[in-house]
Amino acid sequence: AGPSACWFDEAGRWQNPPDLDAWFDGDAPQLDSLSPPARAAEILGTGLRTTAGWQRSEYRERTGYDFFELRSLQIEALIADGLLEHNDDDLRPTRRGLLFANHIARELL
Image (cartoon, rainbow, N blue to C red):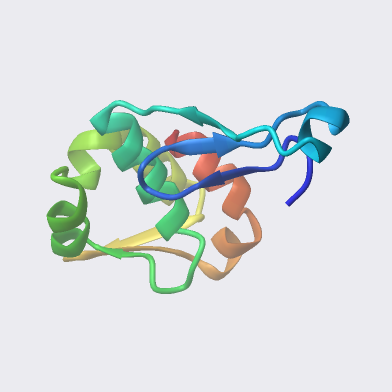
């Protein structure tokens, strides 16, 4: 990964130094610490980039949150837009939703 590269590892959001010289010098990435709800939202958005999506019980066990309690308005809007589907315990992207994975993630953050 190069300068300004970002990633999320469930501990937080990381970013490499944006300056090319600092990156070449091996300066450490910066950690953007997340509150527990923000961390759970990142995990939700990341997990919805796959066809499997999330099982409600699995998400709750992993994060301590229910995804509908955390982001109900956003999830309902994404379902209405045809980007997510929900049945009983599952929340997953539709075929169309997979094409808009970045949009889904952004809406859930």
